[in-house]
Image (cartoon, rainbow, N blue to C red; front, side, top):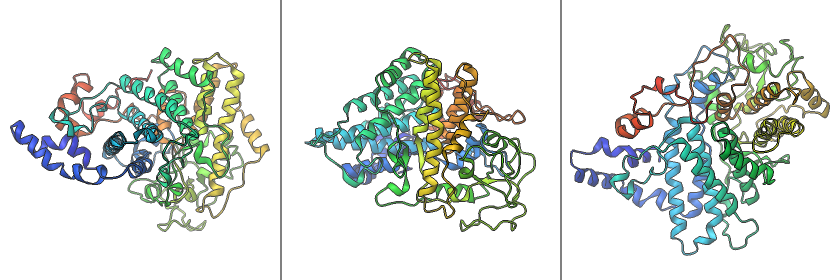
Length: 537
């Protein structure tokens, strides 16, 4: 499927001769497999399950080589990978998803009982919206409305790039349609059974997911499209529309949305996270001093200053059993290997070069229960905190802002406590956070909320949202770019990268549309990344 985007959108140009007739003929021959097999011959449940299994769009190699650095979440290490090697992966993975979505909708439209598949249609629309909104956050303008339509004729072989603002508004309108279209408790709607592995046919959860996406992007666009965003916020917050809340231990999936390998039927093990951490050619990740400073009151190596319970889930001590962060800007490099190749932690004292605290082995080796998250309940609470603190689309209410902020912190801690307790990979389970520990966390001077001081309140909201998205790197990057309020090490100045560059193939195969998307300029990748996205201040 990865080559299908090339076949549909750019492969024709590379293979065609001088005449339009020969081009058309070559394209038709090239795409016989697309017409006759795989995606088009799958039934509706099979196509939906393909969407559910590819609903997340992560590339851990890109995260390690770029996102963790520029968001000040990972200490600079002696082994780095050039991010441009991976910057087109999210682009390449999007279009097979779009093709599968369009094939699903075509199947539904052709079914004589298509009205009974309305819920499936809207669920798929929500998944596409989520992937599309991420594409906007990564690349800005991109081919959307005319993409993956090559079978309609030669006019669609080189799809135009849609404007960011137009795509945002279209997708948010689709989400509203989906929210209003999904019917809970409707016996006429066909169940696709085990193929619905994303939310297990919980239509109320689908509505919460869609509303949460709407709220996230209304906040994202607020400073650029205040009237537009305020209307969405007022509809959701003022209208008390369903949002993630009251997550339940052991069933976090219904309020924390993403790909949960153990929830897929049958369960699927994935080593995509473990691959990133075990390969030194890609990684060498350690707990950064910048993150450590937000989780500990002091630099004591015994960990006595740790006040954020997530620290001991996210990270682990070094070879000497000490909590020693890697300087954000580099400095003393760690030459140890805290992860044995078989995923078993080396006994303390046997790897003297491992001087810095690593990411927790129990977490990074987890192939079954670690979730690849798109949007969490905690994320929504932090959005609400900012909304109330700023008075975005609703009246300013610093009391409600404080309640939402503290609920976001508690939600994130509860989520990771539950994850570690539930995961089979955690042979040594961390203690569940007590009420006293949570109270101490919320009252720590680095965390305590003061709604009377807007800048302090908004900085703390951004900081805690940023910490909660340590394993949502795309969202962490968005928070950094949008707010400018996340913690930064003054000794470390990462390069300014506001977006990912377009794949080089687009310049070659779709030149006119590529150039138009760059406002008529011919820019190399390093020039493209400095251009701000639509919603950036």
